[in-house]
Image 1 (tube, rainbow, N blue to C red):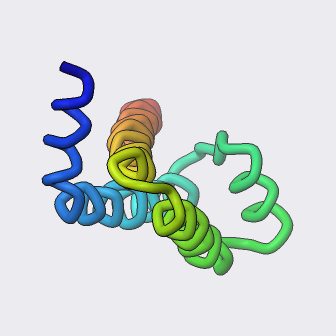
Image 2 (cartoon, rainbow, N blue to C red):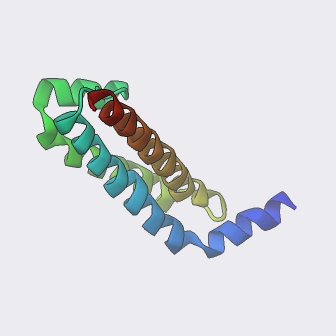
Length: 113
């Protein structure tokens, strides 16, 4: 049964990569920028918090891009069907982080009002 699920996910590999870009790449980046620029919130990810505090928002995109390069590189060398874990992890993490950021922004917005 587990093996069937992996192969079903593998059939959706392109959709998972699109979801990873939309949620982990775009969704997290936009909600992070909005939260940090317009609301009294802080970055909670240790690496991102350090990079943003030391070097500013200009490195947010390269940090995201680097993550995609790292996961994409791993995806390229890990054999099928196990490599599906790369885009799957990014899309799940992206959905969770984007939802978390939206919740924090909503709480901060209500607190300001």
